[in-house]
Image 1 (spheres, rainbow, N blue to C red):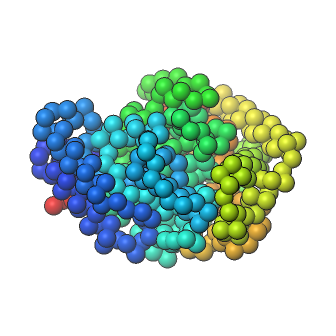
Image 2: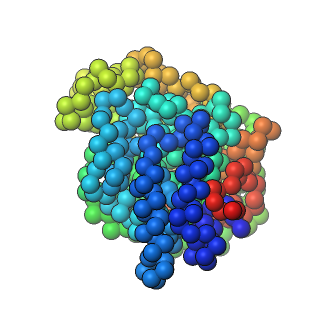
Image 3: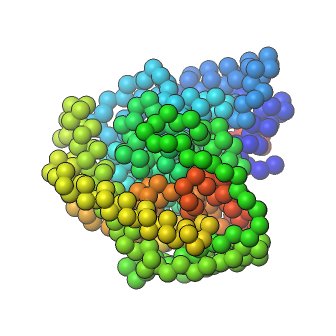
Length: 468
């Protein structure tokens, strides 16, 4: 039995575990792991009521088609919204007030059978690759509590890694699904632009760079959830065609380093080479891709990401009449940057992002997908992405140095997936990343499943209730 959401759902359907028992175990594990700071808001009754409703549906046969019927889950304190869960985006500017309606995605996640009972920790307004909001709690990596679990979906990743839940909602505007997954030994996908619904409120869509889905303990969980959540997004972008992955030899573009500006530590370099050998042994052809072919697109993506989030944040706080003085220092700096940015400057950033997309399209004329490192180093110590300054450019540089290729997928719209492929000498995960042309999300999931089968990573903590 694998420690994931699929196994949990199978145990519930098979009568070895009730949805209520699974929820009670999750709540107990949440209490035991409270020092991790993964959960910022918990509603015990919401979770228990949802679980009891699933148990009743299982008894009367109306939940048979729900792949995750009765599986406990958590929503992120950013994105959504989810009915009954008061999102505050990790900020003292926003009062927690329960919403009365699900977003389109939240409704689909509930329809899959997931039972939500709380919100996971995020950095203020999702502005960091760590999750340490001043309003609290400070979120720690379950694999090594002195290190970050990543951000902005750090609480989600910490909760899944620690076994509080087997699957958790997450969002990704600049690596915010993939970086936490990479830090905590999980699987995460930033889907193709337009595949996952973002309505009916598109305020967190960020001009197309943001996407929502989940962090998971297995590729099969992610594949099932993707099938439940994707398509007919009714948004501002056309639904991409999602062809079934073709079998046979693929051309795998291999990026082995991030250039001299972003040195890659030796363990992570070895992991990417091992993944390439594994794919080559399956009959795929490895095609080296030099860093200098990506370098300008990466730089343009970083500039566009910084400008888009600054303008979006400035517009949001004005529209919602928020008290900016309640924001953290770096958040205020991003708001000021957004107010000061001219239309001409923003347009230049957006224009450069279009050229960045074309650069990657040109590479995809030569290869079917890209295999790259996900992070340049092991998860960084807590405090590495401090908000006690107003240098927004420095903050972006620090995040880019940690995950150089993270925002490229967001800005260009291409799908990207990360999964662990081994451990370093301290037992921390060695993540790799795969990117594919627009709409080829299923190809990424198939390749990730192939790599996962080698079993190079084993979860340290069991899923709550699964082995009772």
